[in-house]
Image (cartoon, rainbow, N blue to C red; front, side, top):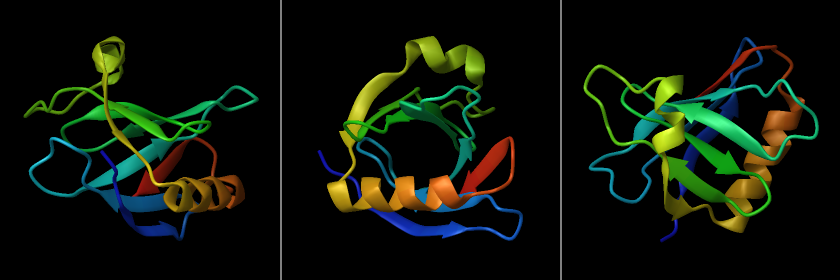
Length: 110
């Protein structure tokens, strides 16, 4: 399992944006990264229109909820399962861009 992140950018409001198709997904989706409130940061919470999950910043492991037509929410986080692994280059790029994002709260990943 290995995922390729695409279109990783910092948006106009300081949000990080990316697009990804993780294992088990039919097509790529746009993702939002929620900026963590604790330090040090070990994982980023991500959300798309239909899923929620986490990316471990130490290992690159991606854990996601099942797809939900109405959208997955934070209450679905206890039910996430590891589905993929980020390539080291993608993980490094995501870390670098995320650290420079200035906006508090939500970081968008398209």
